[in-house]
Image 1 (cartoon, rainbow, N blue to C red):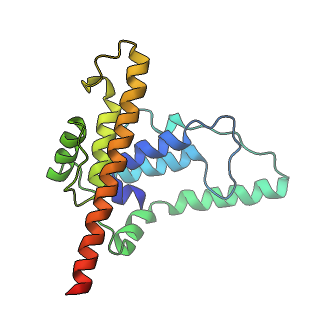
Image 2: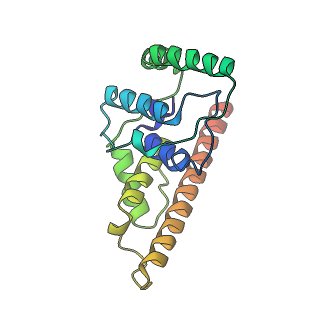
Length: 190
């Protein structure tokens, strides 16, 4: 569902948060991270999203030590997941409810990116996904963002750019929420 709503930025966020396994053991209540990443890339291809090189290979984790019975049960679960994950595409299409599908490259996303690049919160955006996708676009090309040139140390400049980007995204989301609440209150009054 995250991929349906946020598109490419969901893939980047998923990798950013989960790829550095830090020696963690696999959670037996979920498929392996590498398998989950592979499933996401297959769904992303169906949504016509750009391929991210070596995406699935970014993920690793250790298998936990389990009893032979638990290994057997986990293998059955993994085999079943492998057979069923392609149904996700149709299930999401059927049950997404009021959730809107991402729309990469929209006017809103371009506008949001321009606002953020100009150090202004994206105030008139109608989609959280537009802000998040715009932010990831800047984040992935952070060296091209010409701000804070007075900081000579490139690693310090990069850290400050990330801080500024996070602040701008947060403020954009706060403004988005404010506008949503105003709309909701206006509907209640009518």
